[in-house]
Image 1: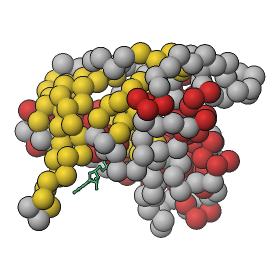
Image 2: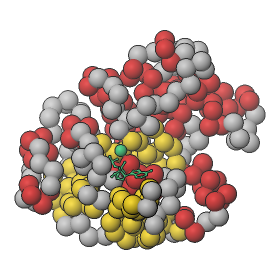
Image 3: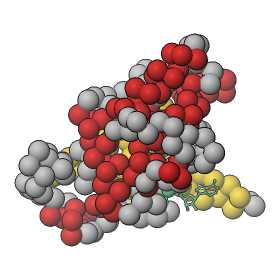
Image 4: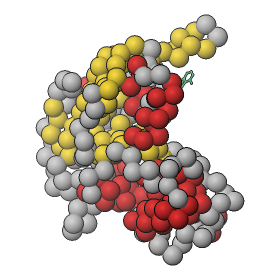
Length: 267
Ligand SMILES: Nc1ncnc2c1ncn2[C@@H]1O[C@H](COP(=O)(O)OP(=O)(O)O)[C@@H](O)[C@H]1O
Ligand SMILES: [Mg+2]
């Protein structure tokens, strides 16, 4: 689905260059639920915005379903982004004076659908994230977890093949954050491809594949056989075969104890 080849990103400010990504090569297949994990400043958000066709790399290629997306004109990039990507931000960025329904309708502004069809679609997606009956509430009249679900509904209303989320639970307490993550798992089960950025190993544990980023590079990967929140609600059975903590560069008890199969980070 998405292939990154030797993607490098440098930011230049006042003559100094910051290397945010250094030759990142990776492949994400359709239907995966991927967590990009790493400490603050490691380049996760840069990688996510590059995947989301919002931030051109300094070098390297981003191929989505065979299309070299940064080779497209800016206008076509915008079209592509609109059709292909839904984005959930850490600050959720709901419009406070619009209802849940109106917030979800926003991305449909330019869609060639009648008002009635738009409302129907937005209502359906709100129901899908568990907010049936709350369409007319303002964000301030919803709990944090419900606001998170409105943000997810808004990201998905255009039916994008790819859902991107940058620290989607960063501003939520852990119980409400877990609700949003459970929703991601459910969407993943229904076939949605999801790439989520987090510095929090507990959040990453909801994904099926972890890509560890450090200093702008992919340092390791692990696959999760049985992800968190399985049917019985118990912690997943675990099997770790391991990269040394030094090579993982991101040691923490939770990940160390997870049952994941590590594999070399080839493309
Ligand atoms: N727009 C920008 N201009 C200049 N430097 C940036 C910009 N965005 C990010 N950076 C720098 O690039 C590096 C990676 O940042 P980022 O991708 O936001 O990391 P993360 O999301 O892992 O915290 C950091 O050193 C950050 O300061
Ligand atoms: Mg970030």
